Length: 151
Length: 287
Ligand code: FES
Ligand code: FES
Image (cartoon, rainbow over all chains, first blue to last red):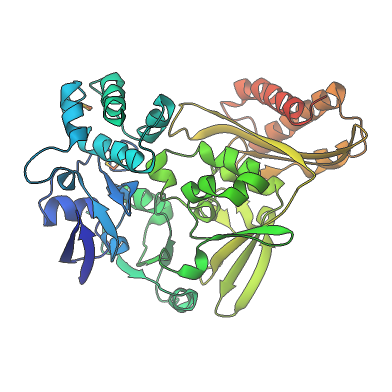
């Protein structure tokens, strides 16, 4: 067990955990932040996507010890003061959320892209969310929502 | 539940080497973790009985891509995303860009390292054929000292390399191949997260339409990434044309058949492979 400090959603965070636990487990079980979803467990579905120093990563493939002194953003950090982030609004508006299981990961992949590239092309959007599987929407509404936000 | 594994994040190369030298522990170096963490999760035999995961991500000396006079050095912390965004690699090592862009998906490329890709030596390590035709060399350190080894010699067989338990690969050195032209080809099953089925890399230097030097490597289709030395020799001095390309394609398919001993997928792969190599040679060497 070890004290691990990192920045979570803009705030300093300290956890006392086994450093070989996965970031995903610490977020969900230790911290109760269940917005980040667990899907495949092996880096293929993207449901567990969070941003690590601004880059999209699968939190099922990162150990908590590896994020010491790093910066983590989860879907809980997107909204502020109880109101949705405009990107989340667009997801609702365009019907990009059905069962919602892929949504947190999708949002973060899209958010990372938009931070680096505010006006992405459709291909750039597709590449950014290629690691996020959605079994409900057929992707089109998601791509439309991201496009609408970027305009 | 997985059995308890210790985790340490090394801050310097020396600290990492000290830990690796302790042979009372089964220590695994953790870089991107995309292979190890999933492997442990799936209880793969390759990752059984690990006592200590040694994270090397915060070792500054293993970061960075440097252009030297006649080579490019890539530290063992460098991720595929960093490769793809790097100006030096884009300019000097286009085949590495081509092979890296098809790897996994963005989340994977943001974590997975080039060095990790071949230290694990999975048959589907996409970057291997490209690195092989560039004659990549590795620098390996342990408390006993440092050594250099060609990537080709480093790879022994699937999931097996020349690395000793107390050693750390610190970087890859790639000699510049400025007067060569080359192409990378990959045929996967799916668009993204394709575990590659066939990958090939070719690098060639011509003078007066004759082959001065040619380097051919395959990945995925062979048990490990592999160069075709005798084909390369055979081609030297020959006219670069369709006739030669057809001959090379046939010979190579035959060799692959021999090393793979006709796996079930071999029958359909061979014609695909012949065509792929032929097309690849045509694209590389515009007639
Ligand atoms: S749960 Fe992490 S990628 Fe699927
Ligand atoms: S909305 Fe159900 S998986 Fe995407």
